[in-house]
Length: 113
Length: 110
Image (cartoon, rainbow over all chains, first blue to last red; front, side, top):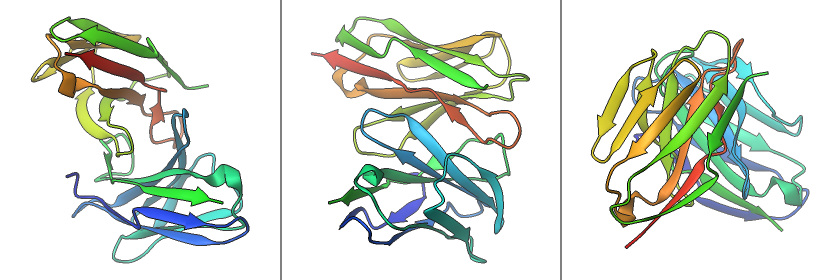
């Protein structure tokens, strides 16, 4: 158990809908990262927040947004969902802003029908 | 462009048959190399961090080593429970936190 929690574990929704994924980092960690992993694809970095502020942006679509709250939990919002958005979404956390080991949560499996 | 390449893509071993996985990278100013294990449908599990050429880390049947341009994950006398995808990652340039390779899918057959 990494100490990172993610909810929900599974999400099934329809095209065009909007969903919110939630992540709580390990106790004491200030950075939260979001990744997408599609079938047979590697881990694609989406976005990082450090202590409430956006720190780095990867291949995140404009339909996706995220935020980190004062209690350091984070939410990833996915809107106007398409079939291709079906994937595993992982959250990770680390103590520092960069260069640290990242610890991953169990993931949310999103299925768009 | 920062790149991490892992080989082979897939590896099938008999139980007890030792082997090595490779991770090569192109990034300026290496600030650490990270190895993870990922089971199907689960989040990656952190294994090791290596910071400088010549450094080695061990955990049970796994040993990670680092040179200036690549890292190896040596698996000694593997067991079926070592079957998983092994990922390596390096911090990217600029503010990119980690760049991951696509992984090596290891299957150990009893």
